[in-house]
Length: 176
Ligand SMILES: Cc1cc2nc3c(=O)[nH]c(=O)nc-3n(C[C@H](O)[C@H](O)[C@H](O)COP(=O)(O)OP(=O)(O)OC[C@H]3O[C@@H](n4cnc5c(N)ncnc54)[C@H](O)[C@@H]3O)c2cc1C
Image (tube, rainbow, N blue to C red; front, side):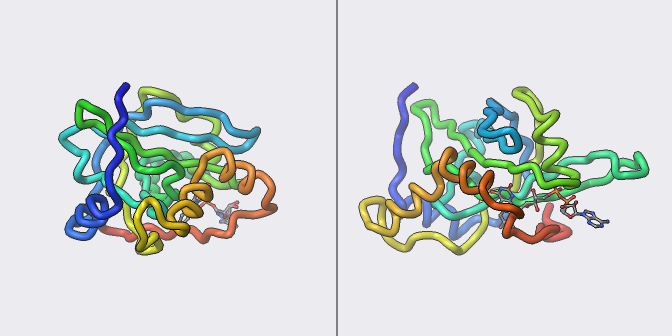
């Protein structure tokens, strides 16, 4: 498949003018990285590519409904950093990858590590986050950002840390 790389300026222009909203995306692949971490690749169809343009360092919110401790269906939203550099394909489609570490006792991450599979559909919010490189893809900071976002390195970092440094819940309560 032909990969077309976007310039940071093109991505920045798109992410700057867009309103974050959820869209259903199909899981293309679930790759096990460690015993308690997976990498999930969502396919982004060409018609939604503009909604899922992103810069290294941004994150997406995932939304689904799972049974809570009492078995009642509960809508949950969780944020995950995008762990691969932006790329799109010749047909206009693109992809989003996130790494999910199982958080002991955590509702979504435990479910995702055990159950999530290719073909499943989750609501994914268009990428957010202002912690991005202001330099182009050739800049030192961009290279550092890209290496930090490499899935395997991220998985190793996640696997080696006793507890995630992120807080939850953190997704705004009412985006569309
Ligand atoms: C910007 C951002 C980016 C992030 N990026 C990533 C990423 O790339 N990869 C990643 O793996 N995570 C990431 N996170 C964290 C992620 O969003 C989730 O918080 C994490 O996966 C846990 O979600 P969960 O549903 O599994 O856990 P939750 O169900 O939310 O539980 C979280 C913790 O609280 C405990 N807990 C739950 N309920 C109770 C209770 N009643 N009493 C006591 N303890 C309780 C659980 O045991 C668990 O340890 C990110 C967070 C943010 C804010």
